[in-house]
Length: 380
Image (cartoon, rainbow, N blue to C red; front, side, top):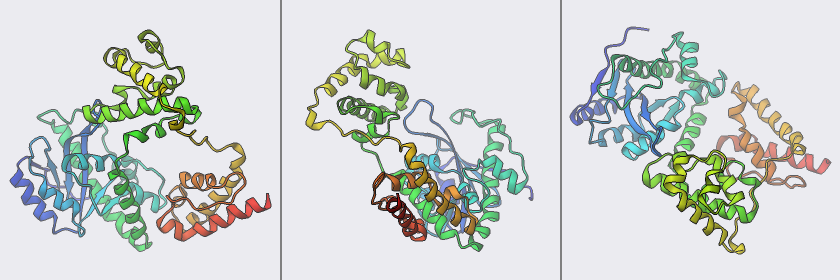
């Protein structure tokens, strides 16, 4: 690889507008972010890195006030935005300037489409394709400090430059295998999912082990989880700083009625008891007063061991297509889809394709999966 020019720091609105007008003329830009999110609900952007394939541009979010030129780049349908494992980067852009990058080429996803490995880390991908060993010395450094150190700037610039180099190698291979539409379909769904805002009232559904709770306990959990989600967003505090997730189910089951009992809940942080203890006790009382007619239904249990045979048969379909297409099997047929399909009819059937099973995968093997599931049920 040729030596890249020194990275250009962009810390004025006019400079950003100028370079964005140049990037709009390109077929792609590589984009990366550095951010902090240890105590906050939303990520705080510390640096935006862009590469045009020749050099790196480092945009200082603490100095820029007008993001409209970058919004135009991020939304331009003619400029592919290249990122790696981009779910958190999408959140950064949504918070920073209100839009997500699209169309989007995720190099981690591309690696899976090229059967190089599923969920491949950036450093490993750079080593595999560019034979470069990346430094990880700045991975956990403070990106909100100013001035940024020379080491931070080198690290950030290298990430963007190598991301562009990866795209230059991977995009032609993806195109040659006729996989570009599938990859872009997946990343479009990723962007759409990031833009869907969960209602706080449904937050309890995602609490680990919530399936173990009875309906009256779920009523308490729902009140607690709704409060936690809403307050975390309004205060811009991390959810677990408000109330640790591991305490939610024990709270819903034991339903303490005083601060001493609250403090004895496993993993309950003393700070939470001091700051929110009385409020949490009141929320528990509210949950206890929910009438039975409004209790949530029990949540689905994990699939039993008896379902493993059907799951295995469905996975074989995905593996056969993956081998034929030379794509990582985890990408061709995702675990959550096979489980969702089994849930539609287990144990007695009939089975139907789950609503979330969409796009090219449904067209490729939807009917085949359904036929196998229902035939298996008929023969059991």
